[in-house]
Length: 219
Image (cartoon, rainbow, N blue to C red; front, side, top):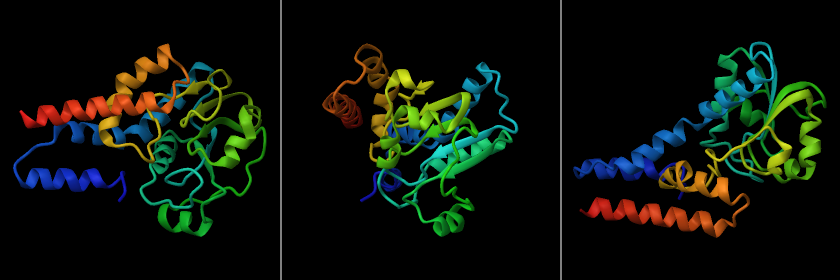
């Protein structure tokens, strides 16, 4: 089914039988708040570079739920957009995979067909579409003004080529809420001491935490 929706069914059923799934609910809360978290981190980075958020032009690359896919259901990118707009930033969203009419109908967004280079105070790479990956770090940075903030949510670009290469929001399109706990502990430790670690390292971490949660639930 859908990893973004299944935890809601699981927690509902668990509560029906008298069990309160603390780990899943904690992961769910973290997951649901990550859009706002990303927007706040971008605002802080802009402030450090003396770029006021109010009136700033921000480009969000990607709206779809996952990369190389047109589906916008359950996308959390809209939370990033909403939070930035609450700071009075002017936010453009570009996604070559998403139907513009659907984006307008579902979220009231007017997608930008092709963003102009050198126009933005911050660029957020929110979805790892192949078109964005093909641009490379220089191509993405060229969309911003000199000194613009480049925030890579999906860790698509080299870490030293962006202003923030996120650890906290990692592959939201497909990971279970329990792995969000890994992202706050195991993921952070590995990212610090082993940048670019292979995917199986993250999977082992998720398995360890999930096993721990199951053991606790069985006590």
